[in-house]
Amino acid sequence: MTDGNQCGHRSDATVHDGDNPELGGQDPGPLTKPLWLWLVYGFALALSVASVWGLLIQFAIVPPPYALLPPLNLSEPDGVFVDWQIAAISQDPSLCERVVLSSPLISAARVNAMPEQEGCGWSNAIRLSAVDNIEVNASPIDCGTAAALALWMTNVVTPAAEEVLSTTVRKVTHFGTYACRNIAGTPWRSVHARAAAIDVAAFTTSDGSNLTVRKH
Image 1 (cartoon, rainbow, N blue to C red):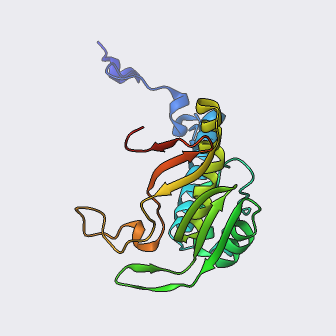
Image 2: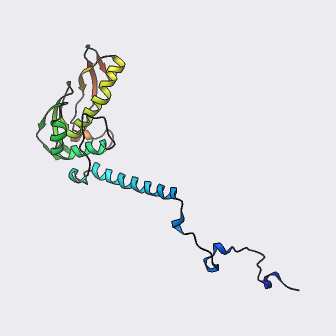
Image 3: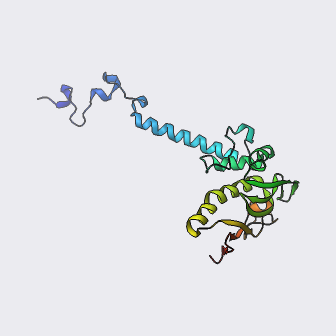
């Protein structure tokens, strides 16, 4: 009488030679992952690197000359890198000169810096008189914020006025740009404390209409 285990047979488990390198099989290893999975890994890595690089630019850890970004063009629609390009303009007065103050769309002049004290002040601001012949009269306004405003007015406001109202905008009224204050209900400074915001209140159209944000 013989036992199954004495004949080299395990009754409670099955061993496949191909799963065990010691028995002549090959371990597939990580390099045999399907190509699509490696593509996903590569895309995720590239996205992570781009996101970190963008944050470094956004928070001025990487200065504009080393950001490797093409300069913003205010005459073209928003691009993929527009947020980073605007941040670079805010940080670099020479970019402000080349992109904003030299643009045919902009009527503006440089404003002297006000050194920051207790989180309030500016270093790269302008007096923005008009954008594409639309009166603005905002001063001081951070140069990057002025670029963002110009893109919004030319790519959003003007087309909307023509499409929805069959008219054009000739003036933007606002509640101000610079205010040395905190974000309401918080201990953190508002971006207004750096002249990096503008509160739009109303639009005056070429037919004399006055459209307010609150009412309309």
